[in-house]
Length: 232
Image 1 (cartoon, rainbow, N blue to C red):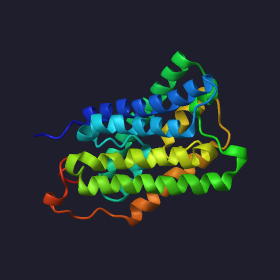
Image 2: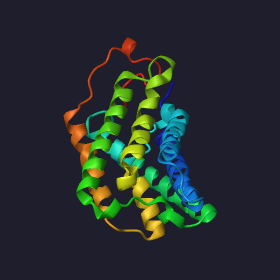
Image 3: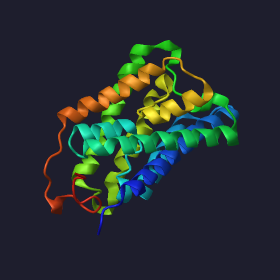
């Protein structure tokens, strides 16, 4: 079977990232309008925001859904560098479209779900975002190298990393782990406070892990169903 075309992959990344941002930040805005929701419920919403597009698009584009994840995959040799700009363009386009839809349907409350360090604590924000970005990228690498596994259980790893991050550091940093998820609501809501923390920390953490955790050969029989070869 021929691999998906670049256009089809970009469309999958745009729609998938849009679903992630729309579900996640939409929950933040809707929760704000309702007077707030428990953090565990917010964590479940973000878990689903990542899981749904992965299930839908992993066989098309690999469901990166995140420019930092694409950066890590390229730095580690799991995808070719020349593919990265196409993924990035699609991811940011999807994120901005989703944030625009949230604004149009739910209004501009809660800064459209923009990420902000609580109490201006930048050290805590940097440490938290770097740590959980590394966890997210590690979960993606396990999925990419070993396949989805029996009953496709490994596709739960990236959503679980995001859900855990939302629960643990969400109250401190907003839990970004994703430059597209942060930039779109920030721009559309005009919320630029400490934006650099997320746009620098998250890609650097992803890049660092990508440089030290290189792709390895895995016996085809051990990969399980799903992606059966490194996307080279």
